[in-house]
Length: 572
View 1 (tube, rainbow, N blue to C red):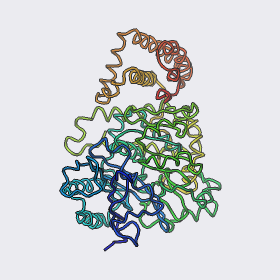
View 2 (cartoon, one colour; view 1 turned 45 degrees about the horizontal axis):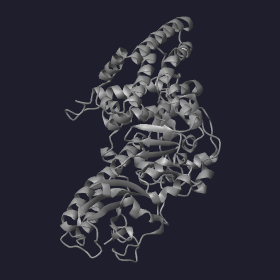
View 3 (cartoon, one colour; view 1 turned 30 degrees about the vertical axis):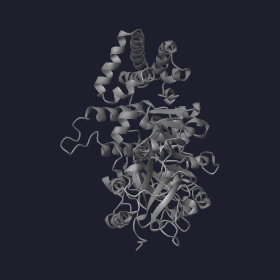
View 4 (cartoon, one colour; view 1 turned 180 degrees about the vertical axis):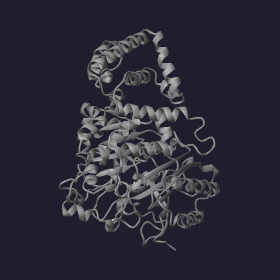
């Protein structure tokens, strides 16, 4: 009997027919109430389900896993979260071979459609059942799928979206080891609500990287994706986020802001603890949401080729999406940034956006701090099962601190000075985003308890210049020798610096060393002259480095990496 109140909505089997293509072969309960479980009927809003569950290019892999989002059906308000496990088997191995099996291999996916975004937990359970379903070698045996539905609803009922189970399978450690400082660029890209496309194959690597980036935002996975698959924005949302923003020290707020912030309007599934600053808010009756939801900003962990039109839809103002088809990557004009997961490269066409995303000195300190703890503690962080520093939860805590201090700085009376460490162009662009206006329209009393200012703010020093030059050197190595990217990911921070130092034996290495010496002298001399500011030193450093960069046989886009801001332009 169908359990309308369970977290799992449907168990679906999608197969590939040699004439009809991808199609739904089984669903329990039926996707359309008045039809049988094998009718193949699909609700109109879910018409892309077969192409999402059985991904493009799946025939190249024996098995794969897909995370995807579906829009809510009529009468519903929240997105539906899908997890699909794909496998293929030789047709000759089947015990019962149906008449429509004409190819040498049979390709099928078993997927779960759920109300809760427990991707990793659903995947772990689904993989076991998919394996058992294929081991039967008779796809007419559907009892195991019905049992899966009952079991999942029984085991997940009452589960809270808290704790480690939400992040099962998502590893920020691996993300930082691969993308290094660029993780912070990805973080800022999403805060700016840009059109970000992730690209890699197979799909399990794609959705893993994309969802891991989103997990760095506090509360995002748990509460921030409820409205992330709506293909049409809600006009009511646009009306609710206008008005005078509240700033720290304001005595009163507009009445509509007061009504929008009432706790009674929050959904029953979300009960924020008193005093906890909510940075990513759940979807409320007023239509207010977090970074990746509402007003046409989509989160699609995997996009089928049939959804390509969404990238150019005028009602879609932004997205975080994943794709494996090369056509998505080739049409660069449809995205603000293309993230090549395999190469750990972020391709940004717009020079102005590159300027907005330039990492400040404080940002580089933050990224270097993360890298140091992740690489140095890689061998023993979980040796006794109690590791913290350098672990996944520790990394998420650092990004939570980064975001909370950014928000606290925005409310501070001296916000202009405090926000400079995050990048003045970036913060100016962030303040006109939908997520900032929604957050600003509500009171957040607990933010007063958070110290404003960048966690790594402070006076500049010679160490900062060395850090920036080391950052530039690493990027040059990655561009010249792609294999070095993999090598660096397995090296400690100290070993990386040693490798960079060994470059001094080459002609280019000597130029780097000379530029370092010249820059260091400029820092010391300027520091003596102006005391606390080294702006002149950085200007001199730019001129000292410009001649060296001009000799490198690199694309013209790379030449600006020696500017006072660390630009992601090298990803071009």
